[in-house]
Image 1 (spheres, rainbow, N blue to C red):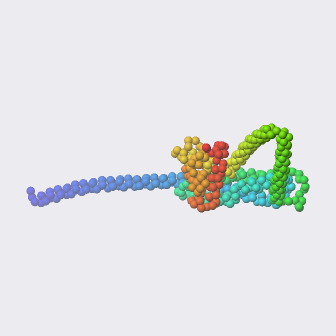
Image 2: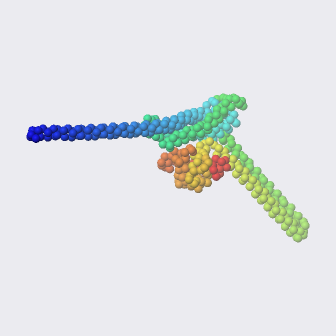
Image 3: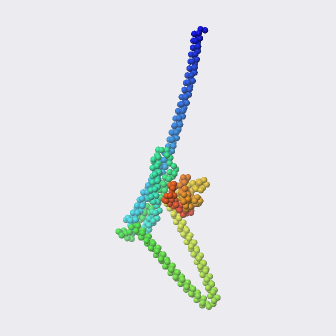
Length: 421
């Protein structure tokens, strides 16, 4: 074969080999690029799905937070409105009651002794038993503080706690409970004024007619003087009776001695004396029995009267408001198995005693406050006490007052089924 022919053949073979190698490289490179593009598209799709999932979760969390914010904000506004109305009622009642002591309407009331007695009960019993304006303002400021906190958090992911909701609901419930005594006091004062305008006085109103405040003071002075006169009269009667008794006893003794001497028989005299002594002992024994019966009967009547007063006190809305965390039925019970009861009931007096909550000591006060503030109790009204409330005289007196009421009224509250045994 000529040399040039061989060279041409080799060149052709080389060209064919290079073409085949190029084709193989091209197809291999093209498949790898397609695979890389598919992987990149898949990663992009997964990243987009993850972002959408994260955004959906954030949107759901924001929706839950907004719903919770609006719910608690509604409770806070309800409490604010109720406490504002209560403060207005309390201020109006205080202003009108103070003015009635010296204004013309009060002087008309003072013309009638029976109305003066009712007015004295209004000023000395009804008004002092109502919550003070300072206490109402404190609760109103707390409710407003909660409302402002929620308003400033609207649109965020902040979710109010259960304690915040319970505090707002308790404030509204307290306002509704104490509004009734204010309404009753207002109605009593209005009734006094209306009745004074209906009744006909013995003497017409004049410039010298006393004010209601003066008439009440004069009534107190007159009753005090009458009590003193009664004491003096009873003492004088007792002295006279004692003198008569001694004189009668002396007369009986003289007659007995005369009869004994007249008999002139010592045996008969001794027998008569012995008989007289026996009758005297029997009479004294009979008197002691009657005295004992009278004391027992008086004691029973005093006990019953005291129980009536305790029942009346237990029915007082203010007392029930103070003891609402213990009288309101619920499932949570301190000291019970699992701390939960099967039925919804008030707290148990024996369990409160067993837990040490009625011990008159700082430890007992702390235990009572822990029960009334427990976040585990979701149904009953809760106290909202600051962390160091034992150093706050007002808060400490609030807890002590509730403890004294439970100690004093505990058996009566059990009898009225307002507490469990």
